[in-house]
Length: 410
Image (tube, rainbow, N blue to C red):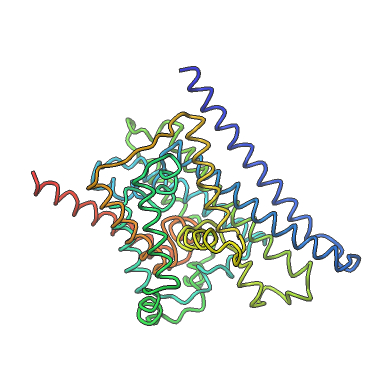
């Protein structure tokens, strides 16, 4: 038991070290924004731009590794948080997700209000309100996570632990998301689903609720989350340290990712006014738009980067995927929980089918359970909340259908 505690303590120490490292990179990035650009030569400006790019990539890798390690050790999974409502009726993981959401919303909104991150330029607030894409994509993704046996982050972690079923889900997810982004099913997404929009200047809920101060909206949402967490039964596992701390750690990865990318987006026009004219510059928006963690686009980009390395360049999203795999692998090795596991053939079929549904649904909805469910939700985007609502509905429907099939076979 003492050796097990020592190993857990070592993993926790590594996680804390990673958090401090990311904060150091953020403050290093912040320092570039206060430089006197007029006194810098063109060579120095280019060197600073390269440094900013390296900081974002390294920071993305560390943040991804933090999430991977936390998910690996805690078994945090939003799929379980959704379908456990009707399967085990144990909402411990649901409350852990609520804690992650509480931290993500609070941290992101503080960064927004203090000017560190302009989330209005993020895809969650500036994209058209493609309501049908959010509904259908969210529902399909929700069904998919039940069949795949895990959410977008969890299947990556399971693969890094040696679970071959998780690897099948990841590969199916990559195949389906890539096809829906750039391939055969992209036409269906663009020509049909994405054309059905509602004209909205912004998806930011406080702006939609015109006349109500934004802080009241934020406090109201946070209070609902706190009440839900406090209503856990006294005998629930929630009242231990594992699940609340896991939720806090996951929420912090979302906040740190926003902070890192938001500062890069804010700093670059100050450093290089020749290349970037300001926040609305199309080139700046294309490459450096403020973003946090997501795996719908990231997984597909990572696969394309691996197979087309000479024609591609690494970015924040790709580095986070590598980070999640690395963090989960290291945590499983240290904790001695790494183990090659081949599920039964029937489960492999579920993994394949679930991964295909997840990839299509995530891209259609412009994000997965992390991208829309935490990163997007933290911006208080109405589209993200709609998507997450239908991910929940899809997961519950998928769980009920699987229960029905099981009972029918008995």
